[in-house]
Image (tube, rainbow, N blue to C red):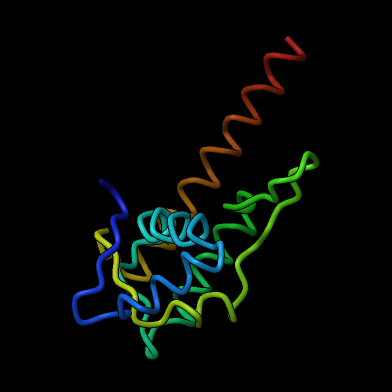
Length: 125
């Protein structure tokens, strides 16, 4: 499974259980999938800010990864404090460099812009 969590030499089983028992297992699962999107396979003391920055950049461009469960589905953006809570967790995802991530974002923005341009052209034709 993509984004599968593991805690070998990382976050303790007790810490993971604490998050699950506090009702944020959905956030933990979401974060594991987000790790694929941003190309980072762990959250550490050294990289949690970069992890947050990549999530924030992606969400700023394309919208939140999470939404409230109520009927209005309000976007919920990741906070730096939430990311810090997960220091020590590791994911099964590929690692990419900052440059590769930035290219991924730029390519996706261009795709969105081209899609919008093509839609506009079709409307006026």
